[in-house]
Length: 276
Picture 1 (cartoon, rainbow, N blue to C red):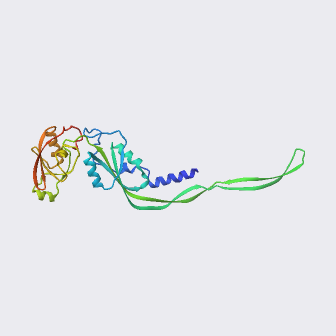
Picture 2 (cartoon, helix red, strand yellow; picture 1 turned 90 degrees about the vertical axis):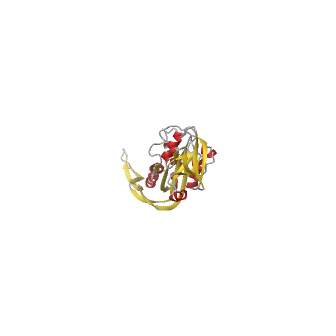
Picture 3 (cartoon, rainbow, N blue to C red; picture 1 turned 180 degrees about the vertical axis):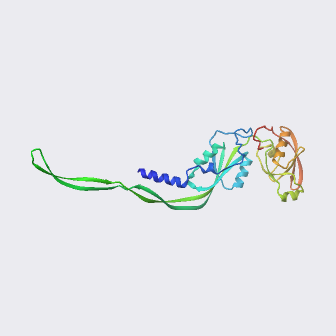
């Protein structure tokens, strides 16, 4: 490949962007703590697994039910040619085991990139003449003289780039949970239905967990764990610590009926980052 084409390719890469956008536009859900110091997460050294997502909400639900925690996400509008390599780089940087990718076509950018390339001109001239030898006898000659004129010219290189909304979520495996619930705050509508500000809505139940085997299901409202009222992440975590590795009565509301379940909790592993 001629040298000037390397220049052209380099200019196009600069125009379209070479930095890793999955790192540049990453949103961290761990508040900068990361995962390496957590005692509740598996830090795997295996290859990152990339999944092509379909529906963000349903995919998030499935990952949570399978015992994974979302670490954060990358979101930006860019070209399709960025590829999986940069996704893997970002996933490894934050110690994620899975990356779920989503792309939605938005538009195509077209244009021309002006590039200056060599434009050398070559010419030749016929030369005739007479020379004289040592004995004074004349001899005629005829030949070609080559001339090179160095110069440059500017050409337009057309380009066309498809643009996409790109979104990638990153996930890490949780160690066996104490109870196995992912909770949301109550909406105003639910508070009206149960006549209380207190409680937390079960968003997902982790498969194989104590909550799963005790038939707590998505949509239940957790009211109490033992004598601890549950209405925030802090009250939930404190209750798990207090009844770690014990059997405890868990009070739930299901279809406006209050139900009590006696559940044997797993052991709470004390650590710096306690998401569960």
